[in-house]
Image (cartoon, rainbow, N blue to C red; front, side, top):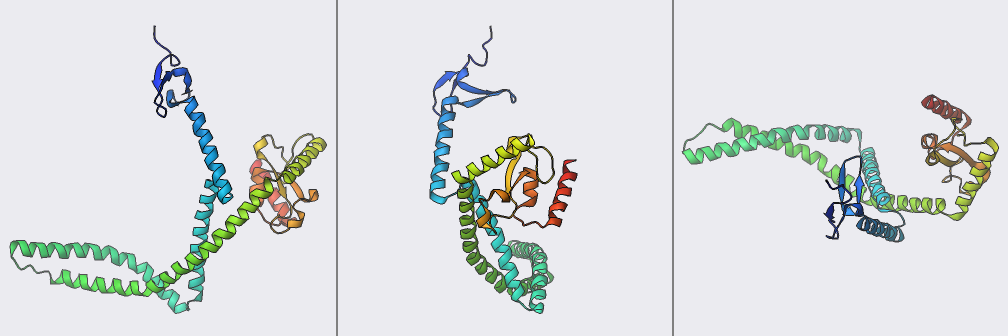
Length: 280
């Protein structure tokens, strides 16, 4: 009689204890067992939750959000620093910079093979003692090295200035983005907003019988797709953040399409038409 998956004995990879198969979580879709028992999984989830809570207490946001803010601020700082430095240059200097940058990598691609050929020819002449005719290779190598040095000299000081601007901008952008995200998390986790949101949703469902998106006018069936949006963005009109008349019921797709923009009547109708077309 063969033993079933729940009666076999296994060793937990984390606690190193031998337990029955019923104490391990069986993944039916992949037809295999996990190597960590249920008790160690629960302890791992508890430790992960405590680590995230500690990180939130220290930095105000979760590790994933903090990493995303760092990535976005690095990208924005690089783009803004490059735009600022290149804008302050004259037209001739900008043309020289772009031309030099476009020609620099082809010169590198030519310079490295020529360097290898020069080293190989020197090694052959030293080992065999024969004087090879490598004047053309040395001349090509010298010309390519000189052109590469001139091109690098044209862009070196501009790249250094862009890097210094990027470092100074990154700190400011990171601080502002982190403060804005902490304020965002604090507002939407506050009990005042949760009570206002529940009251608004309860009234909409009582009046219409179900949740209807104010943009595409389609019913929202899944609870995770229900969002409450501010008609006038909270960042631009903080005094209307807790006003019930400023709230809209939107599905997740329409809310993402609107973002934090203040829509006019024409833009509102255009967004509504696009939402209807996408949901059709």
